[in-house]
Image (cartoon, rainbow, N blue to C red):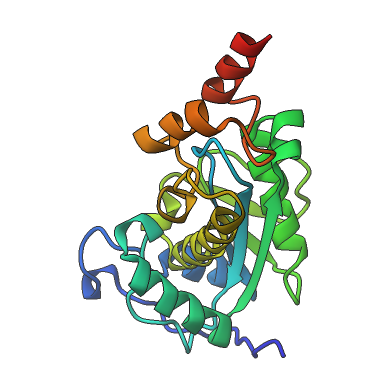
Amino acid sequence: MPFPFYLAMPTPLRLNRPMNQPDYSFETAAHTAGALRVAGVDEVGRGPIAGPVTAAAVILDPARIPAGLNDSKKLSAKRRDILAAELHACAEVSIAHCTVEEIDRHNILRASHIAMCRAIDGLPSAPDHLLIDGNMIPRGLTLPAEAIVKGDGRSLSIAAASIVAKVARDAIMRDLAQHFPGYGWETNAGYPSKSHKAALLDLGITPHHRRSFAPIHNILCKDI
């Protein structure tokens, strides 16, 4: 069930947090302006040449914020797994994807934004304000929103979204690796590592490779 929110909330101080780590100041500003439910939104998987792009939207309970939230790229896989489990237990979390086919049909930026919108729509309760990682607001959003460059390292809600999205997408890639062994997706998550690109030449292209991305497109052109 959705947790309660209150108009009066303590304002966390940046000085009490280590430097270069996210805090709750963006969320507090939104609460002060009248928003009760503030969602952080982030995506993972723009750079891989295989697999979906995944987005998450997270509304934190201000009274139950897990310690150690940060940009998912700055955390170990074990730490991400622990924090993701905590977030699923104490926050409102929604995860959504855009398929390889959708990435190729639109483009990776648009597909990322579509996944973000799906994640927002999937929240148990509609948010009043959105904190979006990056420098663009996804097209079509009707909710009040602000884009925050490098938001996963600045906002706790966006950091939370980056963690649950990363954990969810990595799990998908590990599962796909069982069905398509040899590409190293269980470790490279579909990114174009040297071994992954070598496997493309040895094993060929799978249905889960993004054909609009240069490494895949170039191989396909050669085969014509």
